[in-house]
Amino acid sequence: MKIDSSIFKAYDIRGIYPDQLNEEVAYKLGKALVAFLGAEVLVVGRDMRLSSDSLFEALSKGIMEQGADVVDIGLTSSPIFNFSVAEYEHHDGGIMITASHNPKEYNGFKLSDFQAVPISSIYGLPRVQKLIEEGRFVKKKEGVVIETYMLRPYLDKVLGMVDREKIKGLKVVIDCGNGMGGVSIPPIFRRLKDCKLIKLYFEPDGTFPHHEPNPLKEETLEDLKKKVVETKADFGVALDGDGDRIGFIDEKGEVIPGDLITTLVACEMLKQNPGEKVIYDLRSSWVVKEEIEKAGGVPIMWKVGHALIKKKMREENVLFAGELSNHFYFRDFYFVECADLVLLKIMEVLFREKKPLSKLVEPLRRYYVSGEINSDVKDKEAKMKELAKKYKDAKKIYWLDGVSVEYKDWWFNVRPSQTEPLLRLNLEAKTKKLMEEKRNEALKIIRE
Image 1 (tube, rainbow, N blue to C red):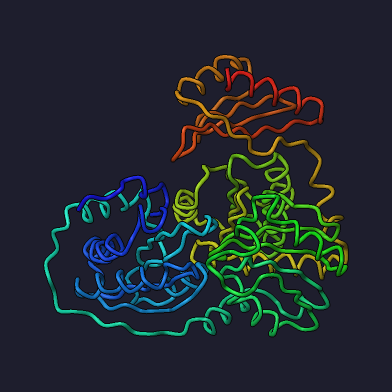
Image 2: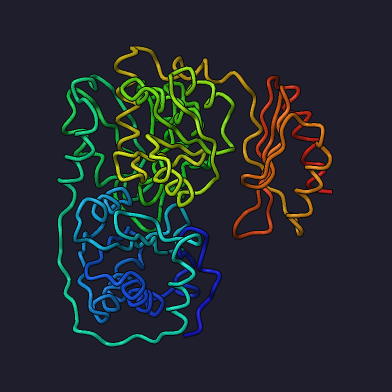
């Protein structure tokens, strides 16, 4: 079968429907994943995109014709999907039909092995791609579809990981971006005492009539910021399309970067788990490492990307991990993302501290950051080597993920995009003037 190889990304399969990714791809993918895993039972969930139902039908047909049963959990979020795969030992893996935060013309597939271990370019995805392209499958006794309701056991799991008596009297604005976050949020709030939920765009709608479901884009947060200030809420939250990424806004309408949320949640969890390990991605502020150590934890800097972080978490038995991209992972939630649990942990902190979120974050904003800046570069490897040579007098230079250069009062990381001819710069300094000076200096080298 001729297939557009560009749909196979580092961590999932994703493309424009139906030009790059369609029912034929879904059908063959169903067969290929059963063959790859030797699966007897696969969980399948889907988001609200207009093509998801049709892709589900084709995918399920492929899975069943290859001899496996389909556990159909219906319209769902990625955290509920991961729970469904990992919690039940007879589930051999699964596929979530979603294109996450991408615009409406996209769709895709996130693949999981047993216990929600991600199938990605570092494990399994190249083999699955080859099986699809070869298309040589032996017909087996056909499986069946089993419709299963997973929301209630998921809620029991997540709410059992916090103390609901310590979450009271908070007012929260949540923007689901017409994605799947709205599945779990209302029933969570119904189980909390005296907490008020103010809803924005909870109705699942694959046309995304209000904005792209991407909490990393500042322009998608405008309605949320206004509503938080207007209603005098304690804070605001934005979720992406499949509900596994979560962004936070303080009571003043200011965005809180993902690394500072990592810091707050890590320090909260370390109170009950002193001496445990916490992973943060190498784009994160110096603050993360400093505060984890202060809280009695062991900080581990690691590469960007959910599959890489989940693998490292399992290897090191890490308590918690957070990325600048608003992905947050918990050991006690199968080493995968759970945006709902992050929300509850932040609510625990707010209730206990009796301080506005802006005041809790204020001491963490002690350095100055550039934000992630992308540049078009043809020869990415050569440019990174040029940067390493230019800053060879640095205190530390390392190649964990791209090139990182560290001085006593500033640092930067430049890493290549997995899918585009881009280099991504993140830079931090102890003063605003130094940050701007070094940012401009590094960008000039990158873009020459």
